[in-house]
Image (tube, rainbow, N blue to C red):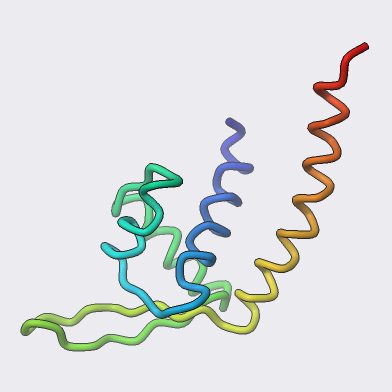
Length: 102
């Protein structure tokens, strides 16, 4: 798969994983596992990128004596998911064109 396409899909998938509820890294990996194989070492750079693009925010909470980072989707992140849904319609149309029978 094209690296840029995969990167974009992973970004949207992470945003979708926290769309309805704030979450932390390990849980995000666990929630995505039935759909996408992603490791924590892949996830954390994605989370940092999404945060730097203001698509999510982060807060630290003490949990069992350690700080745990919780990620929250921002209005810009929600908007990005909606934009993706519209873009996906075009991608599906292109796919149908490519696989059509001659």
